[in-house]
Amino acid sequence: MAVDYFMHEKIWFEKYKYDDAERRYYEQMNGPVSSSSHQQSASTTSSGPGGDQNELLSRISHLEVENQNLRSVVADLQMAIFKLESRLNALEKSSTSHQPSPVPPTQHVTPMKKVEPFSVPSKKPAAAEEDDDDDIDLFGSDDEEEDQEAAKVREERLRQYAEKKAKKPGLIAKSSILLDVKPWDDETDMAKMEECVRSIHMDGLVWGASKLVPVGYGIKKLQIQCVVEDDKVGTDILEEEITKFEDYVQSVDIAAFNKI
Image 1: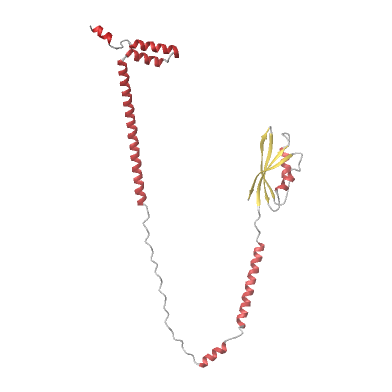
Image 2 (image 1 turned 30 degrees about the horizontal axis):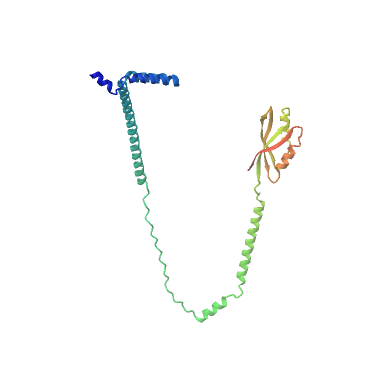
């Protein structure tokens, strides 16, 4: 009776066999699977319901570990925030304590005016007034002589100042120039070329240090420095004089130009 009862019930007792058959079918269709997935599927199929329970327990333990790690990270962050807040409070307290105390406004007291006593003009006798009138010089001859003497002194001082200013030398404008003198080829005598360049003498021209700078293919250029007076020596005249040495010099370029 029991067997007949179970025959009419829709219970799938051999499901694992169909699962294995389905897995092998898909493996033939899609190729062999990796060893890890094969082991995992074998473990799940072999374990059955017990394997699912073990996997669930392993996941729960893994989640608990992650939860513990997250709690520790959150605790560290809270501690760091607490330290920052304490430092900010300390800085605010120190800034408020170091603020200068407000200076009380000064009271401006207006000085009292000095009151001069009222004086009554004394009356002079008529004879004294007549004497005063006699002392007054209506033409002012003495004042005119004093003005002429002051004008002469002022003119003499202006003349001396102009002479002193004319004797004082003015500021001379100078420039520092760095020249690149290029030869024709690598067989050019660079020492002779530098000697030719330094043989140029002009009023307001002073030659400085020099060096040979590699250009390429064994060719080197002469880099020489000079100081010139702007009113006496120009760059055009200097380039023209250097390029006159055609046997050694191919071209001249200005590498740097600075006012002194």
